[in-house]
Image 1: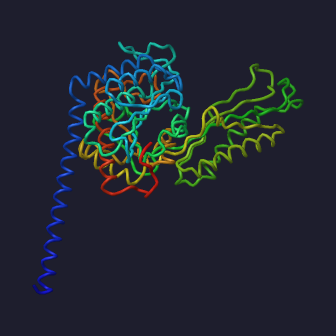
Image 2 (image 1 turned 180 degrees about the horizontal axis):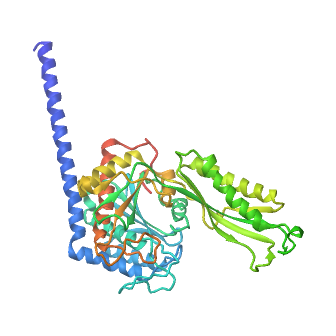
Length: 447
Protein backbone atom coordinates (compact mmCIF):
# COMPACT_ATOMS: atom_id res chain seq x y z
CA UNK A 1 0.00 0.00 0.00
CA UNK A 2 1.39 3.37 -1.00
CA UNK A 3 2.09 6.10 1.54
CA UNK A 4 -0.78 8.24 0.17
CA UNK A 5 -3.26 5.39 0.53
CA UNK A 6 -2.06 4.66 4.06
CA UNK A 7 -2.40 8.29 5.04
CA UNK A 8 -5.89 8.48 3.51
CA UNK A 9 -6.92 5.35 5.43
CA UNK A 10 -5.55 6.80 8.66
CA UNK A 11 -7.58 10.01 8.16
CA UNK A 12 -10.76 7.98 7.61
CA UNK A 13 -10.15 6.03 10.83
CA UNK A 14 -9.66 9.27 12.79
CA UNK A 15 -12.90 10.67 11.38
CA UNK A 16 -14.79 7.54 12.38
CA UNK A 17 -13.49 7.73 15.95
CA UNK A 18 -14.29 11.45 16.12
CA UNK A 19 -17.84 10.80 14.92
CA UNK A 20 -18.28 8.04 17.52
CA UNK A 21 -17.02 10.39 20.26
CA UNK A 22 -19.37 13.17 19.15
CA UNK A 23 -22.40 10.88 19.01
CA UNK A 24 -21.43 9.37 22.37
CA UNK A 25 -21.11 12.82 23.93
CA UNK A 26 -24.43 13.93 22.45
CA UNK A 27 -26.09 10.75 23.69
CA UNK A 28 -24.57 11.29 27.15
CA UNK A 29 -25.85 14.87 27.22
CA UNK A 30 -29.31 13.73 26.17
CA UNK A 31 -29.33 11.03 28.84
CA UNK A 32 -28.25 13.52 31.48
CA UNK A 33 -30.97 15.99 30.49
CA UNK A 34 -33.50 13.20 30.74
CA UNK A 35 -32.12 12.34 34.19
CA UNK A 36 -32.55 15.93 35.39
CA UNK A 37 -36.12 16.04 34.07
CA UNK A 38 -36.70 12.83 35.99
CA UNK A 39 -35.37 14.53 39.13
CA UNK A 40 -37.98 17.28 38.78
CA UNK A 41 -40.77 14.83 37.96
CA UNK A 42 -39.86 12.84 41.07
CA UNK A 43 -39.90 15.92 43.28
CA UNK A 44 -43.34 16.87 41.95
CA UNK A 45 -44.92 13.50 42.73
CA UNK A 46 -47.66 13.93 45.37
CA UNK A 47 -46.05 11.69 47.97
CA UNK A 48 -42.63 13.33 47.53
CA UNK A 49 -44.08 16.85 47.53
CA UNK A 50 -46.21 16.17 50.61
CA UNK A 51 -43.13 14.81 52.40
CA UNK A 52 -41.25 18.05 51.73
CA UNK A 53 -44.17 20.23 52.75
CA UNK A 54 -44.51 18.35 56.03
CA UNK A 55 -40.83 18.87 56.85
CA UNK A 56 -40.89 22.54 55.88
CA UNK A 57 -43.94 23.27 58.03
CA UNK A 58 -42.48 21.41 61.01
CA UNK A 59 -39.30 23.50 60.82
CA UNK A 60 -41.31 26.67 60.23
CA UNK A 61 -43.43 26.16 63.33
CA UNK A 62 -40.39 25.82 65.60
CA UNK A 63 -37.81 28.35 64.41
CA UNK A 64 -34.41 28.56 66.10
CA UNK A 65 -31.92 31.41 66.03
CA UNK A 66 -28.27 31.15 64.98
CA UNK A 67 -26.34 28.37 66.72
CA UNK A 68 -29.49 27.31 68.57
CA UNK A 69 -30.75 25.05 65.74
CA UNK A 70 -30.69 21.90 67.88
CA UNK A 71 -34.20 20.65 67.06
CA UNK A 72 -33.83 21.64 63.39
CA UNK A 73 -30.60 19.65 63.28
CA UNK A 74 -32.41 16.70 64.87
CA UNK A 75 -35.12 16.83 62.18
CA UNK A 76 -32.41 16.77 59.49
CA UNK A 77 -30.54 13.86 61.07
CA UNK A 78 -33.76 11.88 61.50
CA UNK A 79 -34.54 12.22 57.79
CA UNK A 80 -30.97 11.37 56.76
CA UNK A 81 -31.12 8.25 58.95
CA UNK A 82 -34.35 7.19 57.26
CA UNK A 83 -32.72 7.66 53.85
CA UNK A 84 -29.61 5.74 54.87
CA UNK A 85 -27.32 8.73 54.28
CA UNK A 86 -24.19 8.94 56.48
CA UNK A 87 -23.29 12.28 58.04
CA UNK A 88 -21.06 14.13 60.48
CA UNK A 89 -22.53 15.96 63.48
CA UNK A 90 -22.07 18.29 65.22
CA UNK A 91 -20.13 20.54 62.87
CA UNK A 92 -19.89 24.24 63.77
CA UNK A 93 -22.11 23.68 66.85
CA UNK A 94 -25.35 22.46 65.20
CA UNK A 95 -24.36 21.82 61.57
CA UNK A 96 -24.78 18.53 59.73
CA UNK A 97 -22.59 17.35 56.82
CA UNK A 98 -23.99 14.44 54.78
CA UNK A 99 -22.43 12.31 52.04
CA UNK A 100 -23.95 10.59 48.99
CA UNK A 101 -22.03 8.72 46.29
CA UNK A 102 -18.77 6.82 46.11
CA UNK A 103 -17.17 8.46 49.14
CA UNK A 104 -14.23 9.27 46.87
CA UNK A 105 -13.06 12.24 44.79
CA UNK A 106 -14.33 14.40 43.18
CA UNK A 107 -16.40 16.13 45.87
CA UNK A 108 -19.07 18.76 45.19
CA UNK A 109 -21.12 20.46 47.90
CA UNK A 110 -24.70 21.76 47.97
CA UNK A 111 -25.62 23.97 50.92
CA UNK A 112 -28.64 25.14 52.92
CA UNK A 113 -28.78 27.42 55.96
CA UNK A 114 -30.96 26.50 58.95
CA UNK A 115 -31.39 29.51 61.26
CA UNK A 116 -34.38 31.79 61.80
CA UNK A 117 -34.72 35.47 62.72
CA UNK A 118 -35.83 37.32 65.89
CA UNK A 119 -39.06 38.49 64.24
CA UNK A 120 -42.65 37.98 65.37
CA UNK A 121 -44.62 36.31 62.56
CA UNK A 122 -47.74 38.28 61.62
CA UNK A 123 -49.17 35.91 59.01
CA UNK A 124 -52.12 34.03 60.47
CA UNK A 125 -52.11 30.46 59.17
CA UNK A 126 -52.33 26.95 60.51
CA UNK A 127 -48.56 26.39 60.64
CA UNK A 128 -47.35 29.80 61.81
CA UNK A 129 -44.44 30.06 64.24
CA UNK A 130 -45.19 28.66 67.68
CA UNK A 131 -42.20 30.45 69.23
CA UNK A 132 -42.90 34.06 70.27
CA UNK A 133 -40.51 36.56 68.69
CA UNK A 134 -38.94 34.06 66.30
CA UNK A 135 -39.77 33.35 62.64
CA UNK A 136 -38.33 31.80 59.50
CA UNK A 137 -38.62 35.16 57.77
CA UNK A 138 -35.75 34.51 55.35
CA UNK A 139 -36.90 31.17 53.97
CA UNK A 140 -34.23 29.01 55.58
CA UNK A 141 -36.92 26.46 56.46
CA UNK A 142 -37.49 26.08 52.71
CA UNK A 143 -33.74 25.95 52.02
CA UNK A 144 -33.28 23.10 54.49
CA UNK A 145 -36.29 21.23 53.10
CA UNK A 146 -35.11 21.52 49.49
CA UNK A 147 -31.66 20.20 50.39
CA UNK A 148 -33.28 17.22 52.09
CA UNK A 149 -35.37 16.79 48.92
CA UNK A 150 -32.19 16.80 46.83
CA UNK A 151 -30.67 14.27 49.21
CA UNK A 152 -33.63 11.92 48.73
CA UNK A 153 -33.41 12.24 44.93
CA UNK A 154 -29.66 11.69 44.87
CA UNK A 155 -29.87 8.68 47.18
CA UNK A 156 -32.30 7.06 44.74
CA UNK A 157 -29.71 7.58 41.98
CA UNK A 158 -26.58 6.96 44.05
CA UNK A 159 -25.21 4.35 41.63
CA UNK A 160 -25.17 6.99 38.87
CA UNK A 161 -23.11 9.49 40.88
CA UNK A 162 -19.48 9.60 39.74
CA UNK A 163 -17.97 11.02 42.91
CA UNK A 164 -19.40 12.33 46.17
CA UNK A 165 -22.07 14.93 46.86
CA UNK A 166 -21.54 16.70 50.19
CA UNK A 167 -24.72 17.99 51.87
CA UNK A 168 -24.04 21.11 53.95
CA UNK A 169 -26.73 21.95 56.51
CA UNK A 170 -25.24 25.14 57.91
CA UNK A 171 -26.10 27.07 61.08
CA UNK A 172 -25.77 30.77 61.79
CA UNK A 173 -26.11 32.51 58.42
CA UNK A 174 -27.98 35.45 59.94
CA UNK A 175 -25.05 37.49 61.20
CA UNK A 176 -23.23 34.50 62.68
CA UNK A 177 -20.91 33.69 59.75
CA UNK A 178 -21.81 30.02 60.01
CA UNK A 179 -20.14 29.33 56.66
CA UNK A 180 -16.85 30.54 58.12
CA UNK A 181 -17.19 28.11 61.02
CA UNK A 182 -18.00 25.23 58.64
CA UNK A 183 -14.79 25.97 56.72
CA UNK A 184 -12.75 26.26 59.92
CA UNK A 185 -14.00 22.81 60.97
CA UNK A 186 -12.25 21.31 57.92
CA UNK A 187 -15.43 19.55 56.80
CA UNK A 188 -15.09 20.85 53.21
CA UNK A 189 -11.32 20.58 52.90
CA UNK A 190 -11.31 18.68 49.59
CA UNK A 191 -14.54 19.95 48.06
CA UNK A 192 -13.83 21.39 44.59
CA UNK A 193 -17.08 23.36 44.07
CA UNK A 194 -20.15 24.43 46.03
CA UNK A 195 -23.67 25.53 45.03
CA UNK A 196 -26.26 27.42 47.06
CA UNK A 197 -29.63 29.10 46.54
CA UNK A 198 -31.96 31.58 48.17
CA UNK A 199 -35.71 31.87 47.83
CA UNK A 200 -36.97 35.02 46.12
CA UNK A 201 -40.65 35.77 46.92
CA UNK A 202 -40.89 38.34 44.10
CA UNK A 203 -39.91 35.85 41.37
CA UNK A 204 -42.49 33.39 39.97
CA UNK A 205 -42.30 29.70 40.88
CA UNK A 206 -40.29 27.66 38.37
CA UNK A 207 -37.96 30.55 37.53
CA UNK A 208 -34.42 31.37 38.66
CA UNK A 209 -32.19 34.43 38.57
CA UNK A 210 -28.44 34.82 38.86
CA UNK A 211 -25.35 36.29 37.22
CA UNK A 212 -21.65 35.67 36.78
CA UNK A 213 -19.29 37.74 38.95
CA UNK A 214 -20.49 39.99 41.78
CA UNK A 215 -23.93 38.89 42.95
CA UNK A 216 -24.31 40.34 46.45
CA UNK A 217 -22.36 42.91 48.43
CA UNK A 218 -19.94 42.30 51.23
CA UNK A 219 -20.72 44.12 54.45
CA UNK A 220 -19.24 45.29 57.70
CA UNK A 221 -20.83 46.77 60.81
CA UNK A 222 -19.58 49.40 63.20
CA UNK A 223 -20.51 50.95 66.50
CA UNK A 224 -18.83 54.06 67.92
CA UNK A 225 -18.93 55.79 71.29
CA UNK A 226 -18.32 59.54 71.08
CA UNK A 227 -17.37 60.94 74.47
CA UNK A 228 -17.74 64.58 75.44
CA UNK A 229 -18.64 66.36 78.67
CA UNK A 230 -22.22 66.61 79.78
CA UNK A 231 -23.94 69.64 81.25
CA UNK A 232 -27.02 71.84 81.31
CA UNK A 233 -28.43 72.77 77.90
CA UNK A 234 -28.82 76.39 79.03
CA UNK A 235 -25.05 76.84 79.42
CA UNK A 236 -23.57 74.77 76.53
CA UNK A 237 -20.22 76.60 76.74
CA UNK A 238 -19.45 74.68 79.92
CA UNK A 239 -19.92 71.35 78.14
CA UNK A 240 -18.32 69.45 75.27
CA UNK A 241 -21.30 68.44 73.18
CA UNK A 242 -21.10 64.85 71.83
CA UNK A 243 -24.47 65.25 70.06
CA UNK A 244 -23.04 67.96 67.81
CA UNK A 245 -19.89 65.90 67.24
CA UNK A 246 -21.91 62.80 66.38
CA UNK A 247 -24.09 64.83 63.99
CA UNK A 248 -20.98 66.03 62.14
CA UNK A 249 -19.73 62.45 62.00
CA UNK A 250 -22.95 61.24 60.38
CA UNK A 251 -22.80 63.97 57.71
CA UNK A 252 -19.10 63.41 57.03
CA UNK A 253 -19.54 59.65 56.58
CA UNK A 254 -21.84 60.32 53.63
CA UNK A 255 -18.95 61.87 51.72
CA UNK A 256 -17.14 58.51 51.66
CA UNK A 257 -19.53 57.36 48.92
CA UNK A 258 -20.39 60.65 47.23
CA UNK A 259 -16.83 62.05 47.02
CA UNK A 260 -14.33 59.22 47.56
CA UNK A 261 -15.88 56.21 45.84
CA UNK A 262 -15.73 55.59 42.09
CA UNK A 263 -19.30 56.18 40.83
CA UNK A 264 -19.04 52.88 38.92
CA UNK A 265 -18.08 50.99 42.10
CA UNK A 266 -21.32 50.79 44.08
CA UNK A 267 -20.88 51.32 47.81
CA UNK A 268 -23.13 52.03 50.78
CA UNK A 269 -22.50 53.67 54.15
CA UNK A 270 -25.55 53.92 56.41
CA UNK A 271 -25.76 55.17 60.00
CA UNK A 272 -28.82 53.45 61.44
CA UNK A 273 -28.26 53.93 65.17
CA UNK A 274 -28.02 57.22 67.07
CA UNK A 275 -28.48 57.14 70.84
CA UNK A 276 -27.67 59.81 73.38
CA UNK A 277 -29.21 61.41 76.43
CA UNK A 278 -32.70 61.18 77.82
CA UNK A 279 -33.61 64.66 79.01
CA UNK A 280 -34.58 67.60 76.83
CA UNK A 281 -32.46 70.09 78.76
CA UNK A 282 -29.30 68.08 79.44
CA UNK A 283 -26.31 67.62 77.15
CA UNK A 284 -25.22 63.97 77.57
CA UNK A 285 -21.73 62.77 78.34
CA UNK A 286 -21.64 60.50 75.29
CA UNK A 287 -23.47 59.42 72.14
CA UNK A 288 -23.50 55.99 70.54
CA UNK A 289 -23.83 55.66 66.77
CA UNK A 290 -23.74 52.56 64.59
CA UNK A 291 -24.35 51.34 61.09
CA UNK A 292 -23.18 49.33 58.12
CA UNK A 293 -20.91 49.71 55.10
CA UNK A 294 -21.15 47.63 51.92
CA UNK A 295 -19.35 47.06 48.63
CA UNK A 296 -19.02 44.55 45.80
CA UNK A 297 -15.23 44.24 46.09
CA UNK A 298 -12.98 43.21 48.96
CA UNK A 299 -10.65 46.15 48.28
CA UNK A 300 -13.44 48.73 48.53
CA UNK A 301 -14.78 47.07 51.66
CA UNK A 302 -11.39 47.32 53.35
CA UNK A 303 -11.05 50.95 52.26
CA UNK A 304 -14.46 51.84 53.72
CA UNK A 305 -13.60 50.13 56.99
CA UNK A 306 -10.39 52.15 57.28
CA UNK A 307 -12.04 55.44 56.37
CA UNK A 308 -15.10 54.94 58.62
CA UNK A 309 -12.80 54.78 61.63
CA UNK A 310 -10.69 57.73 60.47
CA UNK A 311 -13.73 59.93 59.87
CA UNK A 312 -15.38 59.11 63.20
CA UNK A 313 -12.24 59.66 65.27
CA UNK A 314 -11.20 62.75 63.28
CA UNK A 315 -14.57 64.50 63.27
CA UNK A 316 -15.05 63.82 66.97
CA UNK A 317 -11.67 65.42 67.66
CA UNK A 318 -12.67 68.55 65.71
CA UNK A 319 -15.46 69.04 68.25
CA UNK A 320 -13.08 68.37 71.21
CA UNK A 321 -14.54 64.89 71.75
CA UNK A 322 -12.85 61.53 71.59
CA UNK A 323 -14.24 58.43 69.92
CA UNK A 324 -13.68 54.68 69.92
CA UNK A 325 -14.87 52.48 67.04
CA UNK A 326 -15.80 48.81 67.32
CA UNK A 327 -16.31 46.75 64.15
CA UNK A 328 -17.99 43.91 66.09
CA UNK A 329 -15.79 41.26 64.47
CA UNK A 330 -16.29 38.69 67.22
CA UNK A 331 -20.07 39.02 67.46
CA UNK A 332 -20.74 39.52 63.74
CA UNK A 333 -17.77 39.21 61.36
CA UNK A 334 -17.74 41.19 58.14
CA UNK A 335 -19.11 39.23 55.16
CA UNK A 336 -17.13 39.20 51.89
CA UNK A 337 -18.90 39.97 48.58
CA UNK A 338 -20.72 37.04 46.97
CA UNK A 339 -18.92 36.56 43.65
CA UNK A 340 -20.08 33.75 41.32
CA UNK A 341 -17.47 31.68 39.50
CA UNK A 342 -17.55 32.17 35.71
CA UNK A 343 -17.07 28.49 34.88
CA UNK A 344 -19.81 27.39 37.25
CA UNK A 345 -22.06 30.09 35.74
CA UNK A 346 -21.94 28.30 32.39
CA UNK A 347 -22.74 24.98 34.05
CA UNK A 348 -25.66 26.58 35.89
CA UNK A 349 -26.93 28.05 32.62
CA UNK A 350 -26.87 24.63 30.91
CA UNK A 351 -28.63 22.85 33.78
CA UNK A 352 -31.23 25.55 34.50
CA UNK A 353 -32.19 26.18 30.88
CA UNK A 354 -32.51 22.46 30.13
CA UNK A 355 -34.55 21.84 33.27
CA UNK A 356 -36.75 24.95 33.32
CA UNK A 357 -36.55 26.43 29.81
CA UNK A 358 -34.47 29.40 28.68
CA UNK A 359 -37.36 31.84 29.24
CA UNK A 360 -37.45 30.87 32.93
CA UNK A 361 -33.77 31.63 33.56
CA UNK A 362 -32.85 35.28 34.14
CA UNK A 363 -29.29 36.59 33.95
CA UNK A 364 -30.18 40.28 33.78
CA UNK A 365 -30.65 40.62 37.53
CA UNK A 366 -28.44 43.44 38.85
CA UNK A 367 -26.29 42.80 41.95
CA UNK A 368 -27.98 43.48 45.27
CA UNK A 369 -26.45 45.23 48.27
CA UNK A 370 -27.77 42.63 50.72
CA UNK A 371 -25.15 40.17 51.99
CA UNK A 372 -24.88 36.40 52.28
CA UNK A 373 -22.32 34.31 54.17
CA UNK A 374 -22.14 31.85 51.25
CA UNK A 375 -19.39 34.28 50.21
CA UNK A 376 -17.03 32.73 52.78
CA UNK A 377 -17.13 29.47 50.80
CA UNK A 378 -16.41 31.34 47.57
CA UNK A 379 -13.22 32.80 49.02
CA UNK A 380 -11.64 29.32 49.16
CA UNK A 381 -13.81 27.15 46.83
CA UNK A 382 -15.28 27.96 43.40
CA UNK A 383 -18.92 28.66 44.24
CA UNK A 384 -22.22 29.60 42.63
CA UNK A 385 -25.28 31.18 44.22
CA UNK A 386 -28.69 31.81 42.65
CA UNK A 387 -32.21 32.97 43.46
CA UNK A 388 -35.18 30.61 43.23
CA UNK A 389 -38.72 31.87 42.55
CA UNK A 390 -41.20 31.40 45.39
CA UNK A 391 -43.82 34.02 44.56
CA UNK A 392 -47.23 33.36 46.08
CA UNK A 393 -49.77 32.71 43.33
CA UNK A 394 -52.74 33.86 45.41
CA UNK A 395 -53.81 37.50 45.46
CA UNK A 396 -54.43 37.22 49.20
CA UNK A 397 -50.89 38.31 50.00
CA UNK A 398 -48.58 40.96 48.68
CA UNK A 399 -45.15 39.71 47.66
CA UNK A 400 -43.39 40.65 50.87
CA UNK A 401 -39.63 40.47 50.74
CA UNK A 402 -37.46 38.39 53.07
CA UNK A 403 -37.00 39.59 56.67
CA UNK A 404 -40.63 40.66 56.71
CA UNK A 405 -43.06 39.40 59.39
CA UNK A 406 -45.53 38.97 56.52
CA UNK A 407 -43.30 36.74 54.37
CA UNK A 408 -45.22 33.92 52.66
CA UNK A 409 -43.41 31.09 50.88
CA UNK A 410 -45.09 29.34 47.94
CA UNK A 411 -44.45 25.68 48.67
CA UNK A 412 -45.04 24.83 45.00
CA UNK A 413 -41.45 26.01 44.50
CA UNK A 414 -39.92 23.31 46.71
CA UNK A 415 -39.63 20.64 43.95
CA UNK A 416 -37.68 23.05 41.73
CA UNK A 417 -35.10 23.77 44.40
CA UNK A 418 -34.64 20.09 45.20
CA UNK A 419 -34.27 19.13 41.52
CA UNK A 420 -31.87 22.00 40.77
CA UNK A 421 -29.66 21.12 43.73
CA UNK A 422 -29.48 17.49 42.64
CA UNK A 423 -28.97 18.32 38.95
CA UNK A 424 -26.21 20.85 39.57
CA UNK A 425 -24.30 18.39 41.75
CA UNK A 426 -24.54 15.49 39.29
CA UNK A 427 -23.75 17.73 36.32
CA UNK A 428 -20.67 19.15 38.05
CA UNK A 429 -19.28 15.69 38.83
CA UNK A 430 -19.79 14.60 35.20
CA UNK A 431 -18.08 17.76 33.89
CA UNK A 432 -15.26 17.28 36.38
CA UNK A 433 -14.55 13.78 35.11
CA UNK A 434 -14.73 14.93 31.47
CA UNK A 435 -12.55 18.01 31.87
CA UNK A 436 -10.22 16.88 34.66
CA UNK A 437 -9.62 18.60 38.00
CA UNK A 438 -9.37 22.39 37.90
CA UNK A 439 -6.07 22.33 39.73
CA UNK A 440 -3.97 19.19 39.43
CA UNK A 441 -3.12 17.71 42.79
CA UNK A 442 -5.15 20.23 44.76
CA UNK A 443 -7.67 17.76 46.14
CA UNK A 444 -7.16 14.48 47.95
CA UNK A 445 -9.21 11.36 47.37
CA UNK A 446 -11.05 11.48 50.69
CA UNK A 447 -12.62 14.14 52.90
